[in-house]
Image (cartoon, rainbow, N blue to C red; front, side):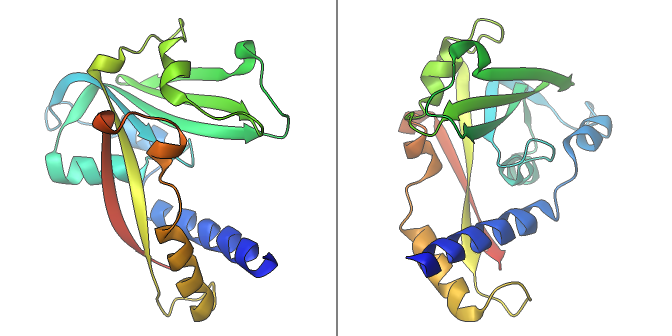
Amino acid sequence: VFTMMSTWRRGRQLLIERTSEDNPPLVRFIAELDPSRMPRVRGTAIYLATRHDSVPYAMMDNLRHNKVLHERVVVLTVVTERVPSVADAERVETEEVGSGIWRIIVHFGFAERPALPRVLAGYATFPIDLAETSFFVGRELPVPSLRPGIAIWREKLYAFMTRNAVSAWEYFQIPPKKVVELGTQVEL
């Protein structure tokens, strides 16, 4: 069990590092955003992100392939606190970063079952119409490589565990019809 847990932790750290290598910091991305080259479409796009300070790779992949950005873009990070539950007043943090892009951090306690749509729909400060919202979720497919960082047998174990893990949209109780899942292969 220890081997599996330590492999999961190290593999996840590497995956976050490797997916963040090509993505710029969020503040720089917004500063360099050229509205004339990037058409905006109606609605809200919520990108689930592990790190709130850089552009999620699902957002970069969507921009590379579709070359559009929604009117309102939310980079959403979920933080699990070391308490059983979080008070509603302390659950959501919002910050407008610029150009219609928002950073939202949602806090859950370790004993809570995170239901993102319910929390976001009930948050009056930043109202989200779920009918006009799409959730973009990245799906990383780890590929063993010769890069340093983790033993090859652990890379294979991590890849196996990732294939069998619950997807983020299921865990956060996001309706399947509201999810756009973008996959990418990541060399560990």
